[in-house]
Image (tube, rainbow, N blue to C red; front, side, top):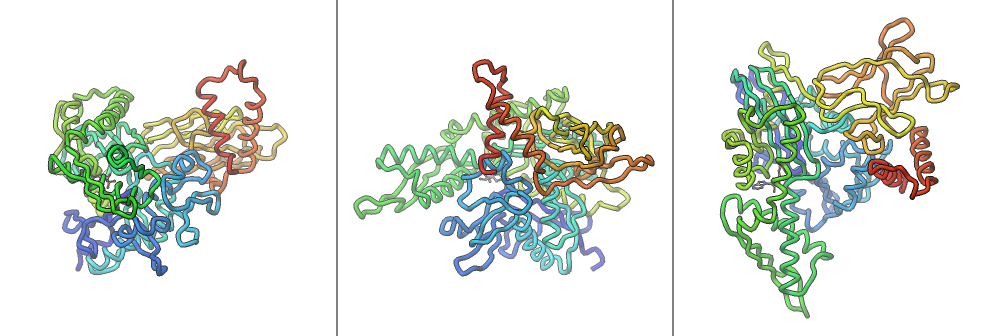
Length: 540
Ligand code: AMP
Protein backbone atom coordinates (compact mmCIF):
# COMPACT_ATOMS: atom_id res chain seq x y z
CA UNK A 1 0.00 0.00 0.00
CA UNK A 2 1.40 3.34 -1.03
CA UNK A 3 0.59 5.17 2.18
CA UNK A 4 1.79 2.39 4.47
CA UNK A 5 3.82 4.11 7.19
CA UNK A 6 7.51 3.27 7.42
CA UNK A 7 8.22 5.41 10.44
CA UNK A 8 6.73 5.16 13.90
CA UNK A 9 6.66 7.39 16.96
CA UNK A 10 7.63 5.76 20.24
CA UNK A 11 6.98 6.89 23.79
CA UNK A 12 9.53 4.88 25.75
CA UNK A 13 8.01 5.32 29.19
CA UNK A 14 9.14 4.48 32.71
CA UNK A 15 6.15 2.23 33.21
CA UNK A 16 4.74 1.66 29.74
CA UNK A 17 5.85 2.05 26.18
CA UNK A 18 3.60 3.00 23.27
CA UNK A 19 4.08 3.02 19.53
CA UNK A 20 2.05 5.09 17.07
CA UNK A 21 1.95 5.55 13.33
CA UNK A 22 0.32 8.01 10.96
CA UNK A 23 -1.94 6.97 8.14
CA UNK A 24 -3.66 9.53 5.94
CA UNK A 25 -2.42 12.21 8.33
CA UNK A 26 -4.12 10.63 11.33
CA UNK A 27 -1.92 9.30 14.13
CA UNK A 28 -3.03 6.13 15.89
CA UNK A 29 -1.61 3.91 18.59
CA UNK A 30 -0.61 0.46 17.36
CA UNK A 31 -2.14 -2.26 19.57
CA UNK A 32 0.10 -4.97 20.97
CA UNK A 33 -0.35 -8.66 20.31
CA UNK A 34 -2.32 -8.85 23.58
CA UNK A 35 -4.71 -6.28 22.13
CA UNK A 36 -3.51 -3.57 24.51
CA UNK A 37 -2.41 -0.12 23.51
CA UNK A 38 0.48 -0.17 25.94
CA UNK A 39 3.44 -2.48 26.42
CA UNK A 40 4.79 -2.51 29.98
CA UNK A 41 8.44 -1.36 29.90
CA UNK A 42 9.54 -4.53 31.63
CA UNK A 43 12.16 -7.08 30.58
CA UNK A 44 12.66 -10.37 32.40
CA UNK A 45 14.34 -13.71 32.25
CA UNK A 46 12.05 -16.63 33.03
CA UNK A 47 13.15 -19.49 35.28
CA UNK A 48 13.63 -21.49 32.06
CA UNK A 49 15.98 -18.83 30.71
CA UNK A 50 13.59 -17.26 28.18
CA UNK A 51 13.77 -13.53 27.59
CA UNK A 52 10.38 -11.97 28.29
CA UNK A 53 9.24 -8.48 27.33
CA UNK A 54 6.14 -6.48 28.26
CA UNK A 55 3.09 -7.98 29.98
CA UNK A 56 4.57 -11.46 30.31
CA UNK A 57 7.66 -10.00 31.96
CA UNK A 58 5.55 -7.86 34.31
CA UNK A 59 3.57 -10.96 35.31
CA UNK A 60 6.63 -12.48 36.94
CA UNK A 61 7.66 -9.32 38.79
CA UNK A 62 6.47 -10.66 42.15
CA UNK A 63 7.71 -14.21 41.83
CA UNK A 64 11.07 -13.49 40.20
CA UNK A 65 11.96 -9.93 41.22
CA UNK A 66 15.73 -10.25 40.85
CA UNK A 67 15.44 -11.16 37.18
CA UNK A 68 12.76 -8.66 36.26
CA UNK A 69 13.99 -5.31 35.04
CA UNK A 70 11.59 -2.36 35.37
CA UNK A 71 12.01 1.38 35.82
CA UNK A 72 15.25 1.30 33.82
CA UNK A 73 14.39 4.63 32.23
CA UNK A 74 15.81 6.17 35.39
CA UNK A 75 19.15 4.45 34.91
CA UNK A 76 19.80 4.66 31.18
CA UNK A 77 22.65 6.97 30.19
CA UNK A 78 23.88 7.33 33.76
CA UNK A 79 27.32 6.61 35.14
CA UNK A 80 27.45 3.94 37.84
CA UNK A 81 29.24 6.30 40.20
CA UNK A 82 26.91 9.24 39.54
CA UNK A 83 24.91 10.73 42.36
CA UNK A 84 21.64 9.82 40.64
CA UNK A 85 22.50 6.10 40.43
CA UNK A 86 23.86 6.24 43.97
CA UNK A 87 20.46 7.58 45.09
CA UNK A 88 18.61 4.86 43.21
CA UNK A 89 20.63 1.90 44.40
CA UNK A 90 18.46 -0.21 46.64
CA UNK A 91 15.30 1.12 45.00
CA UNK A 92 15.19 -1.89 42.68
CA UNK A 93 15.20 -5.59 43.58
CA UNK A 94 17.63 -6.36 40.73
CA UNK A 95 21.36 -5.67 40.82
CA UNK A 96 22.76 -2.45 39.40
CA UNK A 97 26.45 -2.83 38.57
CA UNK A 98 29.25 -0.97 36.87
CA UNK A 99 29.32 -1.75 33.16
CA UNK A 100 31.90 -1.00 30.48
CA UNK A 101 33.07 2.60 30.41
CA UNK A 102 31.79 3.25 33.92
CA UNK A 103 28.15 3.21 32.77
CA UNK A 104 25.47 1.85 35.07
CA UNK A 105 24.42 -1.62 33.94
CA UNK A 106 22.10 -4.30 35.31
CA UNK A 107 22.28 -8.02 36.03
CA UNK A 108 19.71 -10.51 34.85
CA UNK A 109 20.17 -14.25 35.14
CA UNK A 110 23.78 -13.76 36.20
CA UNK A 111 24.59 -11.85 33.00
CA UNK A 112 25.41 -8.18 32.64
CA UNK A 113 23.25 -6.06 30.33
CA UNK A 114 23.82 -2.45 29.34
CA UNK A 115 20.80 -0.21 29.77
CA UNK A 116 20.54 0.61 26.05
CA UNK A 117 20.41 -3.17 25.53
CA UNK A 118 17.55 -3.53 28.02
CA UNK A 119 15.57 -0.75 26.33
CA UNK A 120 16.34 -2.23 22.93
CA UNK A 121 14.52 -5.43 23.96
CA UNK A 122 11.39 -3.37 24.56
CA UNK A 123 11.89 -1.40 21.35
CA UNK A 124 12.45 -4.44 19.18
CA UNK A 125 9.31 -6.03 20.58
CA UNK A 126 7.45 -2.87 19.52
CA UNK A 127 9.09 -3.02 16.12
CA UNK A 128 7.75 -6.54 15.61
CA UNK A 129 4.30 -5.52 16.86
CA UNK A 130 4.21 -2.52 14.52
CA UNK A 131 5.48 -4.50 11.54
CA UNK A 132 2.85 -7.19 12.02
CA UNK A 133 0.08 -4.66 12.45
CA UNK A 134 1.12 -2.32 9.67
CA UNK A 135 1.98 -5.14 7.30
CA UNK A 136 5.59 -4.50 6.36
CA UNK A 137 9.01 -3.41 7.55
CA UNK A 138 9.36 -0.34 9.74
CA UNK A 139 12.87 1.02 9.56
CA UNK A 140 12.68 4.41 11.19
CA UNK A 141 11.46 5.90 14.44
CA UNK A 142 11.12 9.11 16.37
CA UNK A 143 11.63 8.35 20.06
CA UNK A 144 10.61 10.66 22.87
CA UNK A 145 12.63 11.38 25.99
CA UNK A 146 11.96 13.54 29.06
CA UNK A 147 12.85 17.19 28.53
CA UNK A 148 15.31 17.04 31.43
CA UNK A 149 17.34 14.19 29.90
CA UNK A 150 20.95 15.17 29.52
CA UNK A 151 23.17 14.51 26.53
CA UNK A 152 24.32 11.08 27.80
CA UNK A 153 20.76 9.90 28.33
CA UNK A 154 19.67 11.07 24.88
CA UNK A 155 22.63 9.33 23.26
CA UNK A 156 21.84 6.14 25.19
CA UNK A 157 18.20 6.14 23.99
CA UNK A 158 19.39 6.66 20.41
CA UNK A 159 21.73 3.73 20.90
CA UNK A 160 18.83 1.60 22.22
CA UNK A 161 16.85 2.45 19.09
CA UNK A 162 19.79 1.51 16.87
CA UNK A 163 20.26 -1.80 18.71
CA UNK A 164 16.59 -2.55 18.06
CA UNK A 165 17.17 -2.01 14.34
CA UNK A 166 15.64 1.45 13.98
CA UNK A 167 17.08 4.38 12.13
CA UNK A 168 16.33 6.91 14.88
CA UNK A 169 15.40 9.99 12.89
CA UNK A 170 14.82 12.20 15.87
CA UNK A 171 14.85 12.24 19.62
CA UNK A 172 12.02 14.54 20.70
CA UNK A 173 11.17 15.91 24.12
CA UNK A 174 8.03 14.36 25.58
CA UNK A 175 6.22 17.64 26.33
CA UNK A 176 6.96 18.87 22.82
CA UNK A 177 5.49 15.66 21.41
CA UNK A 178 2.41 16.11 23.63
CA UNK A 179 2.04 19.69 22.36
CA UNK A 180 2.27 18.40 18.78
CA UNK A 181 -0.54 15.92 19.42
CA UNK A 182 -2.64 18.82 20.66
CA UNK A 183 -1.79 21.55 18.21
CA UNK A 184 -0.40 20.06 14.98
CA UNK A 185 -2.03 21.57 11.87
CA UNK A 186 -4.63 23.41 13.92
CA UNK A 187 -3.33 26.90 13.18
CA UNK A 188 -3.31 27.93 16.83
CA UNK A 189 -1.67 30.92 18.45
CA UNK A 190 -1.52 29.98 22.13
CA UNK A 191 0.63 29.59 25.18
CA UNK A 192 0.14 26.14 26.65
CA UNK A 193 1.44 24.39 29.74
CA UNK A 194 2.18 20.68 29.51
CA UNK A 195 1.71 19.12 32.96
CA UNK A 196 3.24 15.65 32.92
CA UNK A 197 2.85 13.60 36.07
CA UNK A 198 4.00 10.08 35.27
CA UNK A 199 5.00 7.05 37.27
CA UNK A 200 8.30 8.39 38.55
CA UNK A 201 8.73 11.97 37.45
CA UNK A 202 7.02 15.30 37.14
CA UNK A 203 7.77 17.43 34.14
CA UNK A 204 6.38 20.80 33.18
CA UNK A 205 6.91 22.76 29.98
CA UNK A 206 5.45 25.99 28.72
CA UNK A 207 5.20 26.32 24.96
CA UNK A 208 4.13 28.94 22.50
CA UNK A 209 2.25 27.50 19.54
CA UNK A 210 2.07 29.59 16.42
CA UNK A 211 0.78 27.58 13.50
CA UNK A 212 3.17 24.65 13.21
CA UNK A 213 5.95 26.42 15.08
CA UNK A 214 6.29 24.88 18.54
CA UNK A 215 8.53 26.93 20.75
CA UNK A 216 9.39 25.78 24.25
CA UNK A 217 9.56 28.85 26.47
CA UNK A 218 10.50 27.21 29.76
CA UNK A 219 10.80 23.80 31.26
CA UNK A 220 11.42 22.22 34.65
CA UNK A 221 10.47 19.34 36.85
CA UNK A 222 11.35 16.92 39.59
CA UNK A 223 12.75 13.55 38.62
CA UNK A 224 11.80 12.12 42.01
CA UNK A 225 8.10 12.95 42.07
CA UNK A 226 5.51 10.74 40.44
CA UNK A 227 2.81 8.12 40.76
CA UNK A 228 5.10 5.80 42.72
CA UNK A 229 5.19 8.37 45.54
CA UNK A 230 1.39 8.23 45.71
CA UNK A 231 1.59 4.42 45.88
CA UNK A 232 4.19 4.66 48.64
CA UNK A 233 1.94 6.87 50.74
CA UNK A 234 -0.80 4.22 50.49
CA UNK A 235 1.71 1.46 51.26
CA UNK A 236 2.98 3.25 54.36
CA UNK A 237 -0.58 3.69 55.56
CA UNK A 238 -1.46 0.03 54.91
CA UNK A 239 1.67 -1.21 56.69
CA UNK A 240 0.95 0.99 59.66
CA UNK A 241 -2.68 -0.16 59.90
CA UNK A 242 -1.62 -3.82 59.65
CA UNK A 243 1.04 -3.26 62.30
CA UNK A 244 -1.57 -1.74 64.59
CA UNK A 245 -4.22 -4.36 63.95
CA UNK A 246 -2.27 -7.61 63.54
CA UNK A 247 0.83 -6.56 65.50
CA UNK A 248 2.95 -7.73 62.60
CA UNK A 249 5.46 -5.66 60.69
CA UNK A 250 5.50 -6.62 57.01
CA UNK A 251 8.28 -4.17 56.14
CA UNK A 252 10.87 -6.95 55.79
CA UNK A 253 8.60 -9.39 53.94
CA UNK A 254 9.53 -8.75 50.30
CA UNK A 255 6.76 -10.79 48.72
CA UNK A 256 4.11 -9.22 50.98
CA UNK A 257 5.52 -5.78 50.22
CA UNK A 258 5.35 -6.39 46.49
CA UNK A 259 1.74 -7.53 46.80
CA UNK A 260 0.86 -4.46 48.87
CA UNK A 261 2.61 -2.23 46.36
CA UNK A 262 0.58 -3.67 43.48
CA UNK A 263 -2.63 -3.47 45.49
CA UNK A 264 -1.86 0.12 46.53
CA UNK A 265 -1.45 1.17 42.92
CA UNK A 266 -4.59 -0.67 41.85
CA UNK A 267 -6.56 0.96 44.69
CA UNK A 268 -5.25 4.38 43.71
CA UNK A 269 -6.30 3.85 40.09
CA UNK A 270 -9.75 2.56 41.13
CA UNK A 271 -10.21 5.63 43.33
CA UNK A 272 -9.95 7.77 40.21
CA UNK A 273 -13.29 6.29 39.16
CA UNK A 274 -15.03 5.29 42.38
CA UNK A 275 -15.08 6.89 45.85
CA UNK A 276 -14.34 3.80 48.00
CA UNK A 277 -12.23 0.67 47.68
CA UNK A 278 -11.03 -2.11 49.94
CA UNK A 279 -7.45 -3.33 49.75
CA UNK A 280 -7.97 -7.05 50.13
CA UNK A 281 -4.97 -9.36 50.27
CA UNK A 282 -5.74 -12.85 51.50
CA UNK A 283 -2.98 -14.83 53.23
CA UNK A 284 -0.53 -11.96 53.45
CA UNK A 285 1.26 -13.66 56.35
CA UNK A 286 0.68 -16.37 58.90
CA UNK A 287 0.57 -16.73 62.64
CA UNK A 288 1.12 -20.11 64.28
CA UNK A 289 0.49 -21.82 60.96
CA UNK A 290 -2.80 -19.96 60.44
CA UNK A 291 -3.21 -17.65 57.43
CA UNK A 292 -3.62 -13.93 58.09
CA UNK A 293 -5.52 -11.73 55.63
CA UNK A 294 -5.10 -8.02 55.05
CA UNK A 295 -8.29 -6.03 54.54
CA UNK A 296 -8.12 -2.26 54.68
CA UNK A 297 -10.74 0.14 53.29
CA UNK A 298 -9.64 3.35 51.59
CA UNK A 299 -11.69 6.33 50.43
CA UNK A 300 -10.85 8.84 47.75
CA UNK A 301 -11.09 11.56 50.35
CA UNK A 302 -8.55 9.83 52.55
CA UNK A 303 -6.23 9.23 49.59
CA UNK A 304 -6.46 12.97 48.88
CA UNK A 305 -5.38 13.75 52.44
CA UNK A 306 -2.49 11.26 52.17
CA UNK A 307 -1.17 12.75 48.93
CA UNK A 308 -2.34 16.37 48.71
CA UNK A 309 1.11 17.73 49.51
CA UNK A 310 2.59 15.79 46.57
CA UNK A 311 0.15 17.50 44.20
CA UNK A 312 0.92 20.88 45.79
CA UNK A 313 4.61 20.32 45.09
CA UNK A 314 3.86 20.12 41.36
CA UNK A 315 2.39 23.62 41.49
CA UNK A 316 5.42 25.02 43.27
CA UNK A 317 7.44 23.71 40.33
CA UNK A 318 4.96 25.14 37.77
CA UNK A 319 5.13 28.54 39.45
CA UNK A 320 8.92 28.47 39.52
CA UNK A 321 9.10 27.60 35.82
CA UNK A 322 6.64 30.37 34.91
CA UNK A 323 8.45 32.89 37.12
CA UNK A 324 11.78 32.12 35.47
CA UNK A 325 10.35 33.45 32.22
CA UNK A 326 8.15 36.12 33.78
CA UNK A 327 4.98 34.44 32.48
CA UNK A 328 1.79 34.99 34.49
CA UNK A 329 -0.51 32.04 35.21
CA UNK A 330 -3.33 33.96 33.50
CA UNK A 331 -1.35 34.00 30.22
CA UNK A 332 -1.65 30.23 29.87
CA UNK A 333 -4.39 29.44 27.35
CA UNK A 334 -4.51 25.68 27.83
CA UNK A 335 -3.21 23.07 30.26
CA UNK A 336 -2.43 19.73 28.62
CA UNK A 337 -2.24 16.70 30.88
CA UNK A 338 0.27 13.95 30.28
CA UNK A 339 1.10 10.89 32.40
CA UNK A 340 -1.19 8.40 34.10
CA UNK A 341 -1.08 10.09 37.50
CA UNK A 342 -2.57 13.28 36.04
CA UNK A 343 -5.88 11.37 35.81
CA UNK A 344 -6.32 11.56 39.57
CA UNK A 345 -9.36 13.76 40.29
CA UNK A 346 -7.47 15.68 42.98
CA UNK A 347 -4.82 16.69 40.44
CA UNK A 348 -7.46 18.00 38.06
CA UNK A 349 -9.35 19.84 40.81
CA UNK A 350 -6.19 21.46 42.06
CA UNK A 351 -5.17 22.46 38.54
CA UNK A 352 -8.49 24.22 38.09
CA UNK A 353 -8.07 25.99 41.43
CA UNK A 354 -4.47 26.96 40.70
CA UNK A 355 -4.77 28.13 37.10
CA UNK A 356 -8.40 29.27 37.14
CA UNK A 357 -9.29 26.94 34.27
CA UNK A 358 -9.79 23.20 33.88
CA UNK A 359 -7.19 21.15 32.05
CA UNK A 360 -7.86 20.48 28.37
CA UNK A 361 -10.05 17.48 27.71
CA UNK A 362 -9.59 15.49 24.53
CA UNK A 363 -5.85 15.02 24.65
CA UNK A 364 -5.23 11.52 25.92
CA UNK A 365 -2.68 11.67 28.77
CA UNK A 366 -1.23 8.24 28.03
CA UNK A 367 -1.23 8.40 24.27
CA UNK A 368 -0.41 11.97 23.30
CA UNK A 369 3.38 11.62 23.50
CA UNK A 370 3.53 8.65 21.12
CA UNK A 371 0.97 10.28 18.81
CA UNK A 372 2.98 13.50 18.72
CA UNK A 373 6.21 11.58 18.04
CA UNK A 374 4.48 9.80 15.15
CA UNK A 375 3.20 13.12 13.75
CA UNK A 376 6.70 14.52 13.90
CA UNK A 377 8.11 11.44 12.16
CA UNK A 378 5.48 11.68 9.44
CA UNK A 379 6.11 15.38 8.88
CA UNK A 380 9.92 15.08 8.61
CA UNK A 381 10.93 16.13 5.15
CA UNK A 382 7.40 17.14 4.09
CA UNK A 383 6.49 20.65 2.94
CA UNK A 384 4.33 21.52 5.93
CA UNK A 385 6.97 20.21 8.33
CA UNK A 386 6.81 21.44 11.88
CA UNK A 387 9.41 23.71 13.38
CA UNK A 388 10.48 22.76 16.88
CA UNK A 389 12.27 25.32 18.94
CA UNK A 390 13.17 23.65 22.15
CA UNK A 391 14.74 24.93 25.32
CA UNK A 392 17.68 23.47 27.16
CA UNK A 393 16.45 22.06 30.46
CA UNK A 394 19.80 22.05 32.28
CA UNK A 395 22.82 24.27 31.75
CA UNK A 396 26.06 22.98 30.24
CA UNK A 397 29.52 24.12 31.21
CA UNK A 398 33.03 23.00 31.95
CA UNK A 399 34.79 22.33 35.23
CA UNK A 400 37.13 24.89 36.73
CA UNK A 401 40.10 23.79 38.85
CA UNK A 402 38.25 24.84 42.04
CA UNK A 403 35.50 22.28 41.42
CA UNK A 404 32.98 24.80 40.20
CA UNK A 405 31.40 24.91 36.77
CA UNK A 406 31.87 27.68 34.25
CA UNK A 407 28.51 27.88 32.51
CA UNK A 408 28.63 28.03 28.74
CA UNK A 409 25.03 27.42 27.76
CA UNK A 410 22.38 28.63 30.18
CA UNK A 411 19.19 26.82 31.10
CA UNK A 412 16.20 27.57 28.86
CA UNK A 413 18.45 28.64 25.97
CA UNK A 414 16.64 28.17 22.70
CA UNK A 415 17.83 25.18 20.68
CA UNK A 416 19.16 24.44 18.11
CA UNK A 417 21.90 26.89 19.00
CA UNK A 418 25.64 27.46 19.05
CA UNK A 419 27.72 29.21 21.68
CA UNK A 420 31.31 30.20 20.97
CA UNK A 421 34.07 31.11 23.36
CA UNK A 422 37.87 31.13 23.48
CA UNK A 423 39.72 28.06 24.67
CA UNK A 424 41.30 28.71 28.07
CA UNK A 425 45.01 27.93 28.61
CA UNK A 426 45.91 24.42 29.90
CA UNK A 427 45.59 23.79 33.65
CA UNK A 428 49.40 23.49 33.99
CA UNK A 429 51.57 25.79 31.84
CA UNK A 430 53.76 22.85 30.79
CA UNK A 431 50.83 20.55 29.88
CA UNK A 432 50.66 19.19 26.36
CA UNK A 433 46.88 19.29 26.23
CA UNK A 434 44.02 21.51 27.22
CA UNK A 435 41.31 19.37 28.77
CA UNK A 436 37.80 20.69 29.32
CA UNK A 437 35.65 18.39 31.41
CA UNK A 438 32.08 19.09 30.42
CA UNK A 439 29.18 18.82 32.82
CA UNK A 440 25.45 19.29 32.58
CA UNK A 441 23.24 20.13 35.54
CA UNK A 442 21.73 22.88 37.64
CA UNK A 443 24.39 22.98 40.33
CA UNK A 444 27.39 25.32 40.34
CA UNK A 445 29.47 22.41 41.62
CA UNK A 446 30.74 19.92 39.09
CA UNK A 447 30.27 16.87 41.29
CA UNK A 448 26.53 17.45 41.58
CA UNK A 449 26.19 17.57 37.81
CA UNK A 450 26.35 14.87 35.19
CA UNK A 451 29.70 14.38 33.48
CA UNK A 452 29.24 14.46 29.70
CA UNK A 453 32.79 14.06 28.46
CA UNK A 454 36.13 15.70 27.97
CA UNK A 455 37.36 17.86 25.13
CA UNK A 456 41.07 17.24 24.65
CA UNK A 457 43.05 19.46 22.30
CA UNK A 458 46.78 20.38 22.03
CA UNK A 459 47.82 23.28 24.26
CA UNK A 460 48.72 25.31 21.19
CA UNK A 461 44.99 25.75 20.62
CA UNK A 462 44.66 28.08 23.65
CA UNK A 463 42.81 31.24 22.66
CA UNK A 464 41.23 29.67 19.60
CA UNK A 465 37.48 29.65 19.07
CA UNK A 466 35.53 26.68 20.38
CA UNK A 467 31.85 26.11 19.56
CA UNK A 468 29.34 24.24 21.69
CA UNK A 469 26.52 23.33 19.33
CA UNK A 470 23.20 21.92 20.47
CA UNK A 471 21.39 20.09 17.72
CA UNK A 472 17.61 19.96 17.29
CA UNK A 473 17.68 16.79 19.37
CA UNK A 474 19.53 18.63 22.12
CA UNK A 475 22.70 16.65 21.52
CA UNK A 476 25.99 18.40 22.13
CA UNK A 477 28.58 18.74 19.38
CA UNK A 478 31.89 20.49 19.91
CA UNK A 479 34.03 22.16 17.25
CA UNK A 480 37.44 23.75 17.71
CA UNK A 481 39.00 26.13 15.21
CA UNK A 482 42.20 24.83 13.65
CA UNK A 483 45.28 27.05 13.13
CA UNK A 484 44.00 27.66 9.61
CA UNK A 485 40.74 28.99 11.07
CA UNK A 486 38.72 25.97 9.86
CA UNK A 487 36.40 24.52 12.51
CA UNK A 488 36.95 20.84 13.27
CA UNK A 489 34.57 18.53 15.13
CA UNK A 490 36.00 17.16 18.37
CA UNK A 491 34.69 13.89 19.74
CA UNK A 492 34.01 13.96 23.43
CA UNK A 493 35.72 11.26 25.42
CA UNK A 494 32.59 10.11 27.23
CA UNK A 495 33.29 6.50 27.86
CA UNK A 496 34.88 6.93 31.26
CA UNK A 497 35.69 9.57 33.78
CA UNK A 498 39.23 10.54 32.89
CA UNK A 499 41.94 9.77 35.41
CA UNK A 500 42.87 13.42 35.59
CA UNK A 501 39.36 14.36 36.58
CA UNK A 502 39.20 11.69 39.25
CA UNK A 503 42.51 12.98 40.57
CA UNK A 504 41.27 16.56 40.60
CA UNK A 505 38.17 15.52 42.51
CA UNK A 506 40.24 13.53 44.97
CA UNK A 507 42.49 16.49 45.55
CA UNK A 508 39.46 18.56 46.49
CA UNK A 509 38.49 15.87 49.00
CA UNK A 510 41.95 15.81 50.54
CA UNK A 511 42.02 19.59 50.72
CA UNK A 512 38.63 19.61 52.41
CA UNK A 513 39.54 16.86 54.85
CA UNK A 514 42.59 18.81 55.97
CA UNK A 515 40.52 21.89 56.65
CA UNK A 516 39.71 22.38 60.37
CA UNK A 517 35.95 22.02 60.68
CA UNK A 518 35.45 24.90 63.12
CA UNK A 519 37.17 27.47 60.97
CA UNK A 520 35.63 26.16 57.78
CA UNK A 521 34.06 28.92 55.81
CA UNK A 522 32.09 26.19 54.06
CA UNK A 523 28.66 27.12 52.89
CA UNK A 524 25.96 24.51 52.65
CA UNK A 525 27.00 24.21 49.00
CA UNK A 526 30.50 23.29 50.05
CA UNK A 527 29.24 20.62 52.38
CA UNK A 528 27.25 19.22 49.49
CA UNK A 529 30.41 19.13 47.41
CA UNK A 530 32.29 17.35 50.14
CA UNK A 531 29.74 14.60 50.70
CA UNK A 532 29.07 14.08 47.01
CA UNK A 533 32.72 13.63 46.19
CA UNK A 534 33.04 11.13 48.99
CA UNK A 535 30.09 9.20 47.70
CA UNK A 536 31.57 9.09 44.22
CA UNK A 537 34.75 7.55 45.50
CA UNK A 538 33.34 5.27 48.12
CA UNK A 539 33.20 2.47 45.61
CA UNK A 540 35.77 3.90 43.21
P1 AMP B 1 3.05 6.89 33.06
O1 AMP B 1 4.49 6.95 33.51
O2 AMP B 1 2.59 8.07 32.35
O3 AMP B 1 2.68 5.60 32.40
O4 AMP B 1 2.19 6.93 34.42
C1 AMP B 1 2.07 5.84 35.21
C2 AMP B 1 1.55 6.29 36.56
O5 AMP B 1 0.21 6.73 36.44
C3 AMP B 1 1.54 5.14 37.53
O6 AMP B 1 2.01 5.61 38.79
C4 AMP B 1 0.09 4.78 37.60
O7 AMP B 1 -0.25 4.22 38.85
C5 AMP B 1 -0.60 6.10 37.40
N1 AMP B 1 -1.95 5.97 36.88
C6 AMP B 1 -2.35 5.33 35.76
N2 AMP B 1 -3.66 5.42 35.60
C7 AMP B 1 -4.14 6.13 36.66
C8 AMP B 1 -5.43 6.56 37.06
N3 AMP B 1 -6.52 6.25 36.35
N4 AMP B 1 -5.53 7.28 38.20
C9 AMP B 1 -4.44 7.58 38.93
N5 AMP B 1 -3.19 7.21 38.59
C10 AMP B 1 -3.04 6.49 37.47
